Length: 491
Image 1: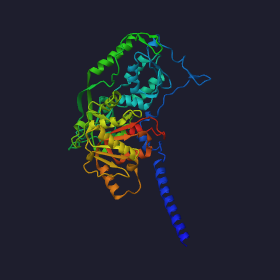
Image 2: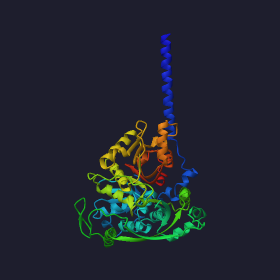
Image 3: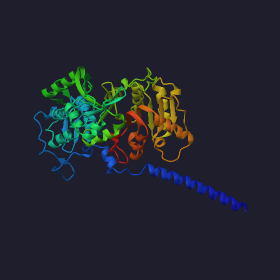
């Protein structure tokens, strides 16, 4: 009898374990559920040009699979002095031994995505998103095409010029700016503002005064520095040694003038005039979707220095926190004109992504929410904040299945994507913390290893908590689930 009882207890234990495993599998399957990229919701979140690729037709391929561009791309007379090959399929090859390599590399990092970078020749790829990023830091369509023409050993293919125009002609021209806790649609192109205001939906989003009349357009002038950052020494028209020890011819005059202008732009401030109109806060999401539909996606910027509603937090970098040049450069792209713009910073493993995140939090100095992909990541982020910043330990709150610190009065909250995206029943304590997280107006949201998160969970997390500025950090641009289509626009 005792044996049978023992057996039944064993079976009960097995059933309980199987039940738990089944629940776990169900949760994992739910998180990995496919996200329909053809759905109306998905299409509303992505501009029509985002899915475009560079077309490469009519190119001969030899028996080894190599593409023959000789008939399509005749070399310039001074091709040996120019560092780039721009292929019709959007791939760009940079000679690392060129005397103007540093300048050309800075430009390519701004407009293209790196593919591989061995010792002598580096490969990049033009994509819709890399061009969107270029426009977001101030590069104009004409700048990109002109610089490519100057740097290229051949003429830039017409297909590439058309692709650049398609991706950049409207993106970045309109910004959604939060100033003094009021939302404004802002542009340096008055004609674009007038075009948007002709749309019925946009007009409905516009703020009206007490008499029901539309508020006036606001014109402002401010000074800003050029978007292109200088790196390395100025390479004037001189003879340099190549990788093989041979002399490289003088830098062409047009290239030298171009780099002199870059240096001049870096030193001088530009005066820019903007036109803006105020919009209703409760209609922001509808406004963003409509602007995307009109092919003028809004570039979100956060005027954190003038945010008087959200209190400043007591945090600064420690004197021991010294940024490396590439970390500083990535943050300069994020904080232009004293505002914070949302985006993704890609740095390799061991390159100090955490310090970049902590520095961003110290710059904004508003409540910060950090999301990682595991409980281990949460503990690492807490130690990084304590290592690099002056934040008090009592101001850091962790929210994981193992650690649920009391959030009252905290300035830095650290959690995981799965904790926030969890859809099943929570404990009473966890539910209280979630309610607090939802109720906060976060100045900065740091999204660690952002390309490892399934798209459905990512969208769910971003609808649960609200943040003025979102900073994605990752070591790779490749997503395992190939759902990068809307990630860039969610951030």
